[in-house]
Image 1: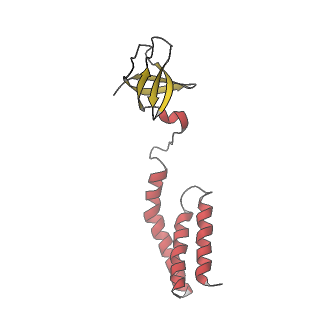
Image 2: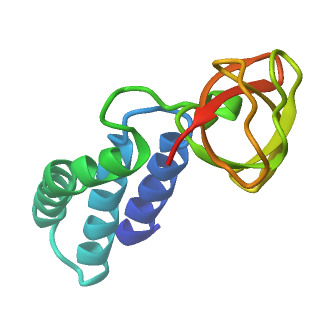
Image 3: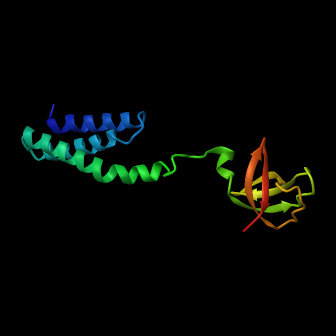
Length: 145
């Protein structure tokens, strides 16, 4: 089997393994293996291939990994999902929110949600609101920008 094929298989294996392990480390090694595969396809010696593998892996780890981490992991360490991601989002009232605990309806992120006022006050239709909390499937909102 030709050396470039072995490097290509290593690259594919590392890329697949990256899918199961967090941290975006193996993708740098995978890209290094791709570079070594290219070098092997030009009949470079094994020491040159290893040097290119190590060099490309280090460059990818130092240059590419921080960029990918900033895209996939938020800076505050939290990645809110589901309804928790709605907190502090802006919405608009589509059905009056009545006084007290009687809920109305708002539209947030292209979805309709039941909502009550945090202060228990009336909020008329077409008013801009900000989601401040969630209880069950009902959002707590207050008038805002």
